[in-house]
Image (tube, rainbow, N blue to C red; front, side, top):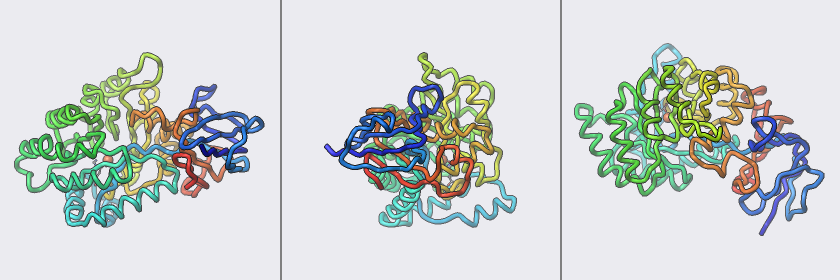
Length: 394
Ligand code: NIG
Ligand code: FE
């Protein structure tokens, strides 16, 4: 068995049990055996290993877990972004533009885009990235989107209910039937999760409930896009169905926050339904940010993710999202870093990710900085010095 010692760590974020929420250890070392963390402790007592990386006093943290991304697409919507910056509102209407380009693309083109964006994210410290379909919106193109996504990630999500495609515009019930029937059958072998865009102009709560229930019956876990563009029943539907995560959560009522808080584990482990906040979307659509403080103060588990997609948030950068969450959403740097690592892992119901404790997957990020604080303190600066994924230096 090959071993690797990551040594001379000035500040180690473990997200394990400790006096502070990040489980910080100073002057620490991490022993990796194969793809797992085998030991964490003081550098002075570090065991011998086959290989050693001396990080020279830098900060080390778990790799980012980006639990919400739409990477399988073709085309570019830079002009739509420019129009928004000139005052146009974001409506989600541009999704159909990307659907047209995605259907026309070859497998090779789609695969190249997924790999390019996944590589971009990895260089910025993302060691796990969920990938959704949702720009095919017919049986063949949703199935191939998920087949291509599954080549890159085991966290794949069927989003056939992103919007009603143009050819079904006047018969949405028929489209819901297609999603629940042949499309789900073709998608399920390549997907772990099912997602619906539950929003005015996309899918109403009855359609969303029907589609998510079909997905559950097919063995998929539930997550959904909800309360992004306005208030609505999506977040509570997520709670009703035991969703792993309700994503966006920009427009929540007190009842929505209470419902999310009501999913708390009895052991103080947080909520079973996570609120995943996507500040890149508010940044890129020039919209008000979600109220992270209100959710945190109510005891809701919060995750941060990029929402990487060509329309509302074309960023693959978790450090950028952390900086936005701290500056614009009043999260503390510690809360934001936790949400981007352990929070993302909770949103994917993975207890082997987002922590650096014995038995966890050996996904580590070495910063070009003495502290995790620098992720928010030095926005826009490439601070990711080295990434170790599955125990392998990248
Ligand atoms: O999460 N809200 C729906 N879906 C994406 C946007 C997709 C697009 O505009 O292409 C989102 O923001
Ligand atoms: Fe999204």
